[in-house]
Length: 262
Image 1 (cartoon, one colour):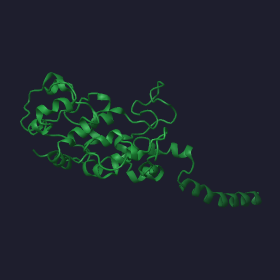
Image 2 (tube, one colour):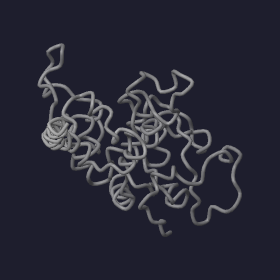
Image 3 (cartoon, one colour):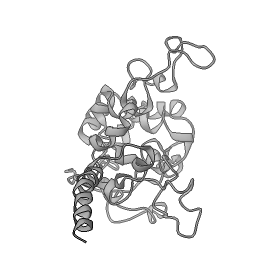
C-alpha cells in the first residue's frame, strides 16, 4: 500500500506542473483560438485593439496586390475611393483605410469592436436553429447597419431637397451641406468611433468631406434611419417620419462620449 501511495504522489508531482503550464498557456491552435472567450460577449465588449491584433495583425499590414487578377497594374488603375477629393495617396486595404491612414486618424476613431461583435463558430448563420443567438452575425461578418451608419444614403424626400445624385442637385446649395446644416441637426457625429470636432473643422474647410462619406461612399444607395438627436432650436415637435426613430445612437457607441455643447 505504501508503495502504491508513493507512486501516486510521484505521478501527481510530475503531472501537476505540466497541467498547470498547459492551463496558463495561450491557445496555439486554430480550434482553441476560435473558441476563445474574446470572440464572445461579454468579453468582446471589453476587448482592446491590441487584444485583437495579437492574432489578426495582418489586417493592418499593407497588402494591396501590385496587379489585379486580370493583369492591370494598381498604379495604372484608380479605385472607386480614390475618385473622391477626401482620399489621398495610393490604393490601400479596407481596414487600413478605416483605421490607420492619415485621413482615418484625422476624422475617425474606429476600433475593432466597433464593427466586430463576435460570431458563432458552430453555425454559418446565427439564427439557423431555435437556440441561435440573435445578437451574433454570420461568422466573421459585420452587421451591414454598422456600415450604413456612415455610408447610408440620405433620404431626399424627408430632407426637402430635389431627388437625384448630389453631384447633379448639389449646385442649388453650392455643394455645401453646411448651407442648411449650420442650423439644422447640428448635434451630429457624437459617437465614440468618430472625431466630431475634427469632422466639423474639415467640413468647414472642404464641403466634399460630407459628400465623401454620405454621398460618394453611400453603400448601395440604401437609406439609413439615423438617430434624430435633438439640437438647439429643434423644438418639441417631431415630424411623422421621425416618430419611430431613436433620439440617441446605440448605447455602446455613446460610451465615453460627452454631450456636445451647442
